[in-house]
Image (cartoon, rainbow, N blue to C red; front, side, top):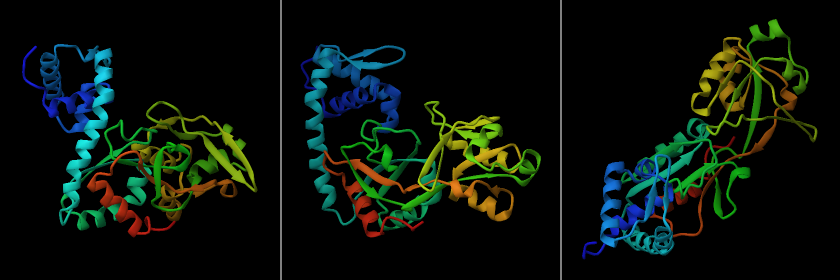
Length: 306
């Protein structure tokens, strides 16, 4: 054990690694190398003379001492970050990094114009956008805010409308496929068709929900292709090539329907749902970059209407 007091940087590194449960995850969130974080942890444990983290090949978890330190350290680190950020608010233009966790659909269909305008208005803020369709704790993931739909928001989060306020899922297939296999007249008919499915990174496959005249229905079809959201265009291409039926955001399929490459089916059953929200923790001081983005979204009227 050394006589030097631990640095705030090393204490913050410990909190980051403990919160993320690993050096690689913490390195991605903190923008540092895993080796640098590991060296900081080794130095901190030597200075304190006690093990703070239990390391295995699969995980990193706090020891009893580490858990006690983390519980007392987190409020203090939050206060320090808030105090420093007060100075940021006094600048003519806020600076820093804003990390957003957003689904593929948001990045593709409505976020870009807002990002372009925000970058022009706040040139000193770096936008770090993570594409992720899974449900995540934005704070634990190292992000400042996220975009998700209402049914997937945490209860203690502040939610601000962003993007189109109403959206729909559409169903379509290529004319060649429908000529070969027939046109489904009811959602249950899809159980007899080749369907192109999407899934979360967790492995869970998206359900195909339908609604008409107050009646709701969920079907679980099968088919030759299952993709994650980041490569959903593979499924769209497969649908255009005549390999099966696709169920996806209406905005995604509209260009192919307009061109005639895909034909809409079961249109009376297409379900609509409320648009997405920007969400962030209401339990802490908002960093200046996030405050600027929240104010910008509010001032812009959320985003282009549906």
